Length: 238
Image 1 (cartoon, rainbow, N blue to C red):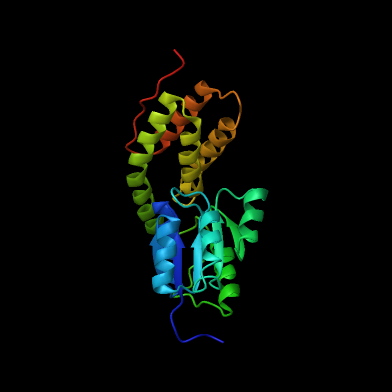
Image 2 (spheres, helix red, strand yellow):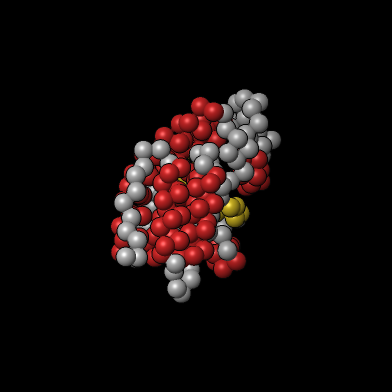
């Protein structure tokens, strides 16, 4: 049976594109949404607004998704709010930690809309009604939606590019791995699947004890060439 109230979804994710794309999707399903960039602000927002469902990323600055779950489960006003983990960093250890600390569902970025809405329906106990009959599938948004999300991505990439350049020039693999993870999770969503593939390759290489920085630079150059209004400022091994 449908509830009379409009479902309220709280989105906690540090990616501008993910927040924008999730907001767009839930708007098509007659949901109210608010979003936060950090787990601490998410906890505060949840206490104020009492959402019906929380969508939570794992890898975030300040307070990550696992720590957010640990705090949430000991707060009486929040512990019964269902949580969907939505992350590009879902390995076995993270999945186990998420479920152990109270996550109800774990989904992988880039997300599939039908899978996401199905999980929300299950947690709500009723089926969300879609405004229009368009068949959305992960990155299969209408051209204008993809264009809108791509603009958001490019704007946010300005600061991410500076982090990439600085991390490569300083050979800071940890900082570079974090930003690559963030970009990987949204590349396909904004119609740039090659960027997702590049970031996946970079993440894998950066886990090695001996990082091939020439390979890293070439991959970054390729990624920059795929993203409009981006220039290269990286230093080789010379």
